[in-house]
Amino acid sequence: MSLNRNFLKGFLVVMVFLVSCKDEAVVKGDLLFEKGQYKEAIEAYDQYLSLNPTHVKSVYNKGRSYEELGQYDKALEAFRKALELDGKNVAALLSIGQYYYRDGQYDNAAFNFGKAVEIDGSNSQAYFLLGRSYHLQGMMKEAMGGYNNAISLNNDLGEAYLYRGALKINLKQGSNACNDFKTAKSLGVKDADEALSQYCK
Image 1 (tube, rainbow, N blue to C red):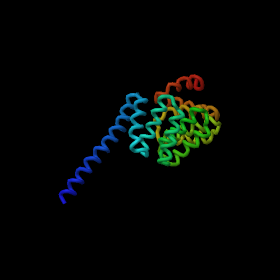
Image 2 (spheres, rainbow, N blue to C red; image 1 turned 60 degrees about the vertical axis):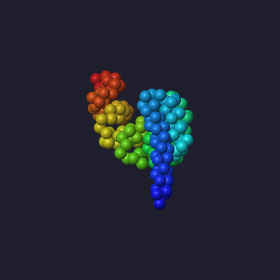
Image 3 (cartoon, helix red, strand yellow; image 1 turned 135 degrees about the vertical axis):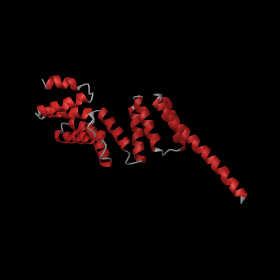
């Protein structure tokens, strides 16, 4: 009986050691990322993922590291992997959407932002990005819905007011647009001053 107990105790010590080694690698990756040492962060995430290849957060953060290095295709590959592992990963969907947005593929961007909204209907940033993607495709009604939802969820989202104001200018709603520009300015959005001077004299 004591032999079994000692064996179990020894086994647990080994397991704790292995887990702590793995945890060390992922924590190291996160710390390196925070310091802006993205190449080193990727190495740490790779080390961790060699032991735990299905750890979604590490896969995603590895993608973010590539993104910060401007290696967008490698970042996209990591984000897609994270989404394969967790089909409801909103962060991965937003990052994939931003990849397409950056590339001017606004329809693909809207698709991914829309999926993020379906999963998390309380995400103001997802609604804002969805609104921008629609806006840049000339889908005015859909864009307005995106901005309105973003603002209703987070009334401090200055950029949503700015772009909603720009949309209202296109829709000939000048006074309402100026109110949005003023709110954007009060929230510290730097382009709001230019919009006010151009449209709200």
